[in-house]
Image 1 (cartoon, rainbow, N blue to C red):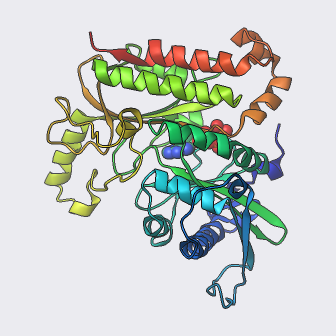
Image 2: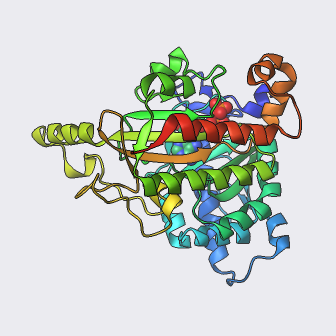
Length: 400
Ligand code: ATP
């Protein structure tokens, strides 16, 4: 098991409702992220564009941001901190690969307050989403950050060869240091736009062992359900036209092979289901209640890396017979077994913590026996095959 210190202590602070992570208030973390990224991205623009070299992956840039300000950095209300940027040139290149210009990256992260997601994961990580919905910022453990650094060159070689992928896109890795505490964060693509209401959200691993959402999770207004819940609620699966189905399965297959090649396991497919018929009803209600335009769902545009582009390449919006005249927000059109029109949002998440699973496994023989597998070098391929089989046979289906 990982220690409490490593996991952080994402719990309400004693004085107020504000969460803390490694004894640092989340408002201070948000502030430091915005100040640090604001500085580092600005600083990068002065560096000329050039090809990424292998050594760029190992560069760590560091800047000190004292509260009173310095000739390089502005004054701020948080304790003094140091901000480290990992592989700045390499990440700038990856952002460009996905069409993210430096100004847009800065604007998304720094111009409006970051929004904290309430208790999304079990790991104790804090999650923030940028107010334009584009990026998710997650605190990660030391080992996860180290793993991402090692993974980067090979991982992005794959993304470069094949931009049609549902793998997570990492846009930055940073560390803030203050009072002897290190807080590491990754910036990645947001799979579920908040402005599109998800009527159901699932975190699917292709396993049935203890894969039911907890009672606490179910009590939330937007719970994330798990594999057994999916089998119960959506036992007939989700239906696609042939072209979309083939594109989706091919993407998942390629992605799983990449993860297997890095011996990565325990990842999930995060799946958001938007039911169009429900949303039409909700819109009618909003209209009748005179909800101001900006507050209506579906107003925000997703700019980068939509689900549809992830499986079909740029330029595909998901418009078609299922969604004529509707803004799909890059969702993948599908149907439920009852014939309801759906938009699906999805991405593979949580690929950095395989080592945690290996640790758990040392203690959890039950899971091993249940899975019918043993600790071996074959385990990543077993995980990938089981994941794919589940997606292929239980979750996604072709309209006959
Ligand atoms: P666990 O230990 O339970 O796996 P974790 O803290 O490592 O949790 P994740 O599994 O990465 O967290 O994510 C937890 C939840 O956060 C997801 O179920 C999802 O609701 C949300 N989330 C994570 N990554 C993303 C993303 N890229 N886009 C949108 N939502 C996300």
